[in-house]
Image (cartoon, rainbow, N blue to C red):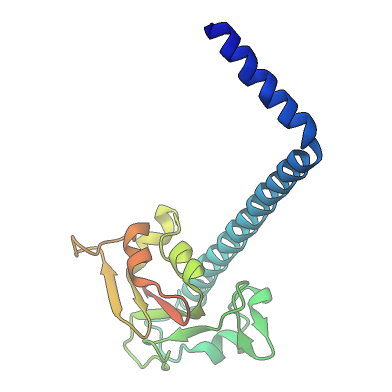
Length: 198
């Protein structure tokens, strides 16, 4: 009796599959193509975030190298970085610093990247107008130890809130956990500021 039920259900399934094989095949093809496209776009996003992180690390390293024989960062701002060709070349477009994500990059002091004054031993690199996923993925990117040695803090800011992450803050420490970045980053207009030291 049990074997008969199994056979009957298999037979019913087989009859159904034969009757609707074109529909089933089309559904499977759409599913496979959809999964393939999702994986492709996910891989592209990861490549862009990795490229943006590499640009950031190179920019910070180049700024330190340019100022290594000077007592401070006096005069550092975005315009100087462009004029002296301190940034990676692909970041300079029409006299503006842009990341490979297409957002504006500023160098200086604070959110507005003001020119640094004599005696300044810290500088900020600001990535403006990041989309939510860009903000999350860049904020919690797994930078290497060498990168983190020169970073004193990271601020994520948007219209809703502003949060500083630092080494001495147990609740909001560095490196930034993705779960915290997800809570802070909003759909649009996110800004991340990396606070760097000599």
